[in-house]
Every structure is written in structure tokens, then in C-alpha cells.
Length: 259
Image (tube, rainbow, N blue to C red):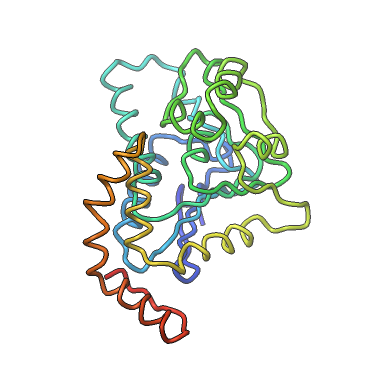
């Protein structure tokens, strides 16, 4: 395949692959547009229950396309590119489907941002994470100023941002960047699918509403109780809730439909 972004279906899991071997899957404008369109469509697809993000050719994503930075960008052009990138990251964080990032090789700059935004990060032993923005005179973008402290805490995020150092998979797991660091003989995609399939087994509306709450922020008990009040009573009325109760009482597995 020669598309910049392509997808495959594995049951209820959509596997989305970044594909530009020459740039280690750098996020060019064309790739950002294709990725935004793909993720937004998947979030609207009732047949999809979880999404896997991965890179082709042994790397996750090397960040922004540096070749596109060689000429000065007028302010409106730069802001337009950020709007496009924000479509991508909002689709990952605020979308209705859980997202698993399967990281091999480099997740650098905006590639790091894309991985950190996922619900679960699976990393091969050769995975490398680097917030390289300080090296090119920029600030972390695509939400990394928020997502990285959420994962590692403010103090560690500062060190990673200011030093622009490379964090390997094992250290990444210790810090919280990586949720699961794999052994050499484990296929990263196969493991990613196993995890994603765990997410597909449960009621889609419940998962989507939990993701929405976490994306908007639950900063105190009052926030949590208000969100429950707004949503739990409505979930009581769904077919999936009734199906789950009936399945429990009859000692069978529930079959959820998202209704």
C-alpha cells in the first residue's frame, strides 16, 4: 500500500497505520489531514469498538515533517496547521473509541504527542520517546503539555521537555509513558490487538462516556457527582444495561449493541 494513512479491520478493532518510509512516518500536512479524516470517521462507525495506532516500516512517528519547515510560515499558515493537528488529537482523546498506541522505533516530537494521547501504550524493546521541540525552537504541541504530565507527573514532564532527551521503552514503562513494554519475541501488533479486544467486550456507550469525562477533566468530587447525575440515569434506560443485567442473572455473556 502507498497511502499515507491506511486502515485494516480485525473484528471490532480498526488498525490505523501511518505510512511514509522516507520520513519515518512524519506528520506532513497531507498525513495530518488523512489521519484526521480517518479517525473522525472511525469515531462515527458503530462497527468499531477500539482503535490501534501504529507506524509502518519499524517506526511509530518521527514527529512533524521538518522538510516542510524550511521556509518561513506566515502566522495564519502556522495556525491552520495547528488546527489540523488539533483535529487529530481531539479525535484520539475526545473520541468515542478507546485508542491503543503500538510503538516501535521512534515516537518523536508530535509522534510522542500522538502516543501519549492514547489510552494505552504498548512498546517494543526498541521504542524511543523524545520531546524534541526544544531542539527546534518550538513548544510541545498536539496536547503534549497536558498529556505527558497526566502520565508521568509534572516534575518528570519538565525534565523530559527541558532536556529533550531520548527515553527508552524500559525507562518509559517505569515513568508511565509506556503501559506495557514487550519482550523481544512478542509481536507488538498482536499484543496491541489483544488489549484492544479487551476494550471491545464492554458496553460502547459506557466506555464513550467515561472517555468523555476523563477528557474534559474530573478535578474534584463535585465534578464526578455532577457527571454521574447527568449521565448515569440515562444509561439505566439503555438496552445494553438491560442486556447486561439479564446476562448476569442468566449466567451468560452479554451481547452489547451500543443502544
